[in-house]
Amino acid sequence: MVQASRAFEVRPPARPFIKWAGGKGQLIPELSRRLPQRFRHYHEPFVGGGALFFHLYNSGLLRDGVTLSDYNAELILCYEVIRDDVESLITALRWHHRNRLDPHYFLDVRSWDRRPDFNQRSKIERAARTIFLNRTCYNGLYRLNRKGQFNAPFGYYKNPLICDPENLRAVSAALRYVELRVSDFGDVLHHAEPGDLVYFDPPYVPTSPTASFTHYTGQTFGPDDQRRLATLFAMLGERGVYAMLSNSSTPLTRELYAAHAVSSSTVYASRKINCDGNKRGNVEELIVCTYPLEAEH
Ligand SMILES: C[S@@+](CC[C@H](N)C(=O)[O-])C[C@H]1O[C@@H](n2cnc3c(N)ncnc32)[C@H](O)[C@@H]1O
Image (tube, rainbow, N blue to C red; front, side):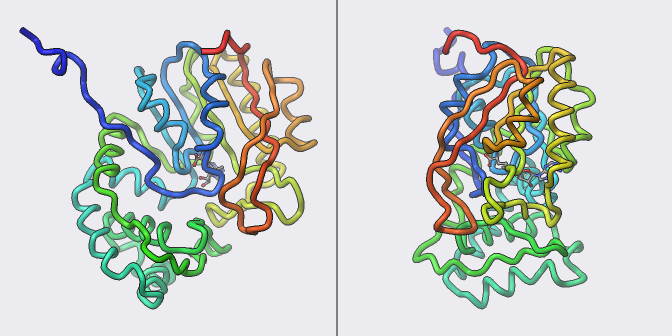
């Protein structure tokens, strides 16, 4: 007799393994109720910490393949290493854990990307460095200067969690069949097909001159990129691809999506990470879709 526990695969839930500016944890209920009832391949071209991906995985909604991408190569390297060699990563993180309270150690590890041999470091070393810096730097902010060098200061946390083996193993299982790419959003969707779902969560259009955070990659994401994205969103809609996008609700975003979004709503979300601590709080977010919303599910 086949036991019930064997008939269904038991999958421990997986959570984002990295804190990411603009992380969508807060917005999951709003995004979730706007998902199409059924979709095929799932694409997330600005994956960051992957809050919606993990939610879909935990809910058993990813049945037909997944492609996750981001322009940030060090971030995608973390996903790759977790998928392909999670045990070596755990060992490397345990080493960093011993030094987690030492600001000199932090500065030394942070400076690796200023040295010529950075690219010769192993994938494991680099991924462990990114996770360690993310857990110990001020605000948990991944921030690069114009030369692409990590420049967030030490966070002085009392006891930062550097290594969470249980979650990392769950993330590794979640990523087992996932295709990962380092890419501009414009180069990954040529093969998206009707019935696929794409979730776009780009760097937000600033709501004020000081409220911008677009330093994820060392390049800025400006109004031309926002326009390029809106054009792609419209093209995907015409091709029968389900596309959902979140952004700040600003005159530019409302104008860009007014003509091409089949459904559009403004919701409120609280911002956890902002470079300026005073600017945290409730913000208006725009969620647009290329398809009509079905009855709530
Ligand atoms: C708002 S964050 C995504 C947050 C994510 N949804 C989460 O839950 O953590 C935006 C992401 O876009 C990435 N990015 C910036 N410019 C990009 C580009 N031109 N193409 C693809 N990704 C880009 C950044 O590296 C960052 O991870």
